[in-house]
Image 1 (cartoon, one colour):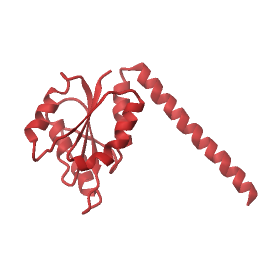
Image 2 (spheres, helix red, strand yellow):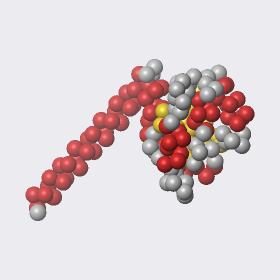
Image 3 (cartoon, one colour):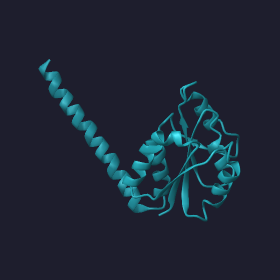
Image 4 (cartoon, one colour):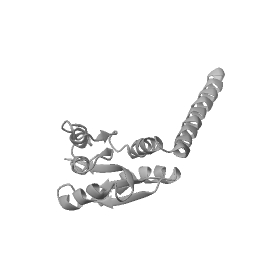
Length: 165
């Protein structure tokens, strides 16, 4: 199975990306987590994405806040899917990062999840990899079935409470 790279613009993004790391581990997907800056280490970020396919990656997740150019920098140097996680900052609560990540020019797409939505980024990466991996696809199907069963159970419990009102 191909690996997933999680590239953070800063080590301060680790609490935000931790749910993605955990989700990918739960699904048995090998993950490499790195810190690279679109602005401070652009050559390293470019080299990473240029070599990502040869190094066994299937998807890159880019987590960045504020100007959030990391996803675009990585996407510019690979044809692998890049998923952006806009990270919240103190100034605009992540809306600046959301807009910077989602508003890529034509030809260099970056799939974008919600602000701080690392778990969804991991699940999207898993879905991309599952296109060619039946075992991973089955894990995702089973996970969704479990989520649905939990909702059905919550509704059942709610109905019981409502009968008491």
